[in-house]
Length: 125
Image (cartoon, one colour):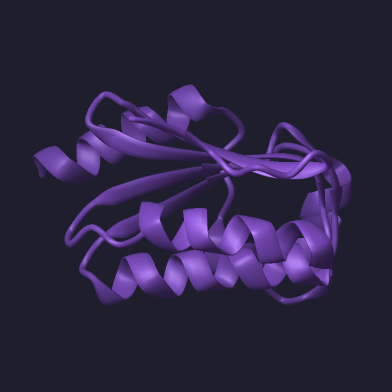
């Protein structure tokens, strides 16, 4: 499964790795991009009991609308009995998460590999 939202500036790429759904946000994630990303994000977070990795490393710009997408993704995944793992090591995004009081909620991991390993652990035990 490989799905990409059709938006030239900020977009999302969805694929599977090791049985987990991986959602990559790319480029500038602002209000305009968020409107185009939302349908793809909702589809990618609709499975019951699934672990989803949301990778923010390819992001170039991230604002309040991107935070709303992140919260929506987690709410949808958790409501379906799943787990959302966020990947982010970018200081500006981590600063925004901290300022919004969301750093503890998402507890970002530094790499996709670490998130995939954590997801596999959660699935196994």
